[in-house]
Image 1 (cartoon, rainbow, N blue to C red):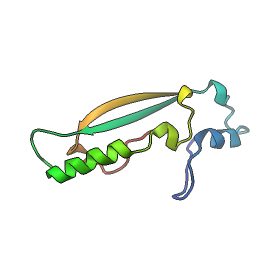
Image 2: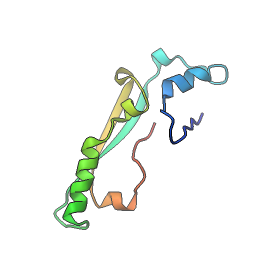
Image 3: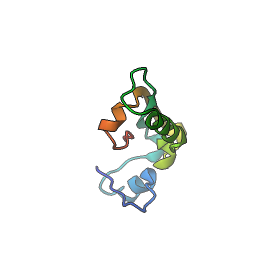
Image 4: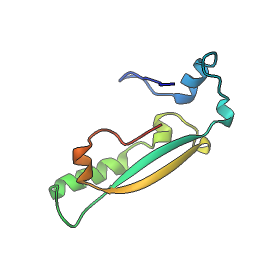
Length: 99
């Protein structure tokens, strides 16, 4: 099942799954969600300007947690975290969140 949300919509994954119970029967109370999170870290070898690394760090710090963004109960979510160089995000500007 693929859930698609528009730009201005709040992506409520549990609510969307419950709305499709006839086609995709799932018990939300017994469902686990696996989320990924990347934290950019500064590097010794400056591939980005210092202001770029600071901006990446600020944006990562202020970012909404994936479980909050997708309205998934934190008790039902497992987060796999990784750290990557700030310069890696220059090549991959898309969000690193997966549901």
